[in-house]
Amino acid sequence: MTKTASFHDLDGASIYITGGGSGIGADLTDGFLAQGANVAFIGRSDASAFVAEMTEKHGRAPLFFQGDITDTDGLRKTIAAAEEAHGPIDTLVSNAANDRRHNWLELTPEDWDFLLSVNLKAYFFAAQAVAPAMIKRGSGAIINFSSISYMMGNAGYPAYTSANGGITAMTRSLARELGPDGIRVNALAPGWVLTEKQLDKWATPDALAAHLERQCLKTHLEPQDIVDAVLFLASNTSKMMTGQCMVVDGGVVTTG
Image (cartoon, rainbow, N blue to C red; front, side, top):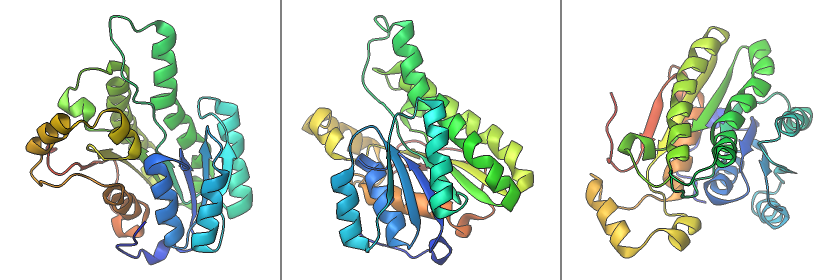
């Protein structure tokens, strides 16, 4: 991960990331470590090899918790442990998501509950868990990953798009709730970022060409583009920015 900008106030900051051991989440962990931050993250799969890689690269290890973000009690315990290790959370990044494709006619109530639990419920309860220490300190940043998929009205995964619309709405409400205590809450809506998962499953040449045609900027998004935006939202550089959904998609959708 290339460090394209330095945010000096992130040096020594306590960061907690959901899904921080794979995909864009791994790039976020790498990016925050490069700024000198102390990073804790939760993930479903064993991330020991990634932790070793980051330790070798940055000279210190991120704190890894193997767990399921839909287990609310377990999620709360990992946040408490991260605060014990690194101090109160300065920035929460709720990144973990499940964008598996599904047929709306075949979706069961159990499928719906699972997808909303991963893609929306966990975001709320992670924010609830970090908020008390932020309120006591009078500062903090919460960054919720949304998606342009619901803005585009994409078909093929309606539970996922519903959750992402909910994330943006929840972000605005939490910004109003927590603003008086100096806490900023923003959403980040990436476009189509070419991670390994996307390249393996859905990024066919025709699909890539069609999406690039929709973009104003004719270059595919890379994880670094998202990392830079998250670092900006975490830093005091964006200290008067809250309740917003920041789109990083090369110019597919417009807001405002």
